[in-house]
Amino acid sequence: MFETRQIHPTLAREVVGLSLWQTLDDATVAELRDLYAQYGVLVFRRQALSEAEFAAFCTLFGPLERTVRSDWASPTTPEVTVLSNLKDGLGRPIGGLGDGELQWHSDQSYMMKPATGAALYALELPAAGGETFWVDLRAAYAKMPRQLRTQIAGKRAIFDYAKRLAGYGRESDRQISDEARRLTPAVTHALIRAHPETGLGSLYLDSTTTIGIDSMDTTSGLALLDEVYASATRDEFIYAHQWQVGDLVLWDNGFTMHRRTPFDPGARRLMKRMTMNLDRYRHVMPDGRLSQSEVGMPI
Ligand code: OGA
Ligand code: MN
Image (cartoon, rainbow, N blue to C red; front, side):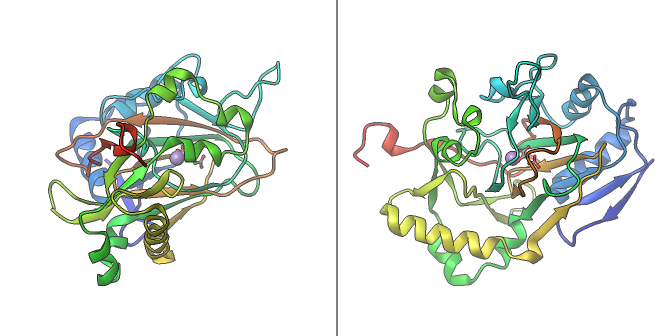
């Protein structure tokens, strides 16, 4: 069996005593699924996993997704996304995201049906920087000023991958295939979502993709979103992860955002990421629709 350690009041538990390359028994798997649904961020340290073992573990939480960034996929396991500043023998990036800062975001928010499960596995780390933070958007919603809650009630934000791309520091990360562009038209998601089991509300946000609020003019929509982001990312809602080689962090993008600090381009950082489709009866699901501006309406 295993133990858990509280590493944040509402978000994030560390799971101690499991070797994830071994086959886990049904009771353990059931308990991990409960913990994942309840806390949103699970940390496992001192793991040594092949890509096949990483994939087998992640599949316990839902079918694996291949993201539109096939250019960042591992050559051996296409469901694994390689995130690194390292280059191969010909000087080509071996994966995505480089060494730059990543602002508060939720993976896949630019998709109509985001696969909200994610896992990040650390293989090489810089001595400083490259830290990752997660924010609990259930707690943020619960503590949001009443007036702001009223202002966003029933509203949908517009999420566009083009905005995320423009923010990337590396040219190779900003370029996507025609196929990826076709798969990522602007979409809208409700800003508030209820958990399917508890009925509790949480925010659904991504500061790197939101370009406005549906049915509001762009300036007022973005101003309202700025207020929401400021209120939602207060320190008390944030879990800061100190990476060690061998860490595996599992998180739920349905009610969290994460951000990463930049690091020295001369240092080495290598992470492997998995994306999973979580159980919609146990996890908050965004409810994407095609944005009106993409279906022939004047912007
Ligand atoms: C991600 C991500 C942050 C990091 O994998 O989606 O945002 O710390 N990674 O590399
Ligand atoms: Mn991310």
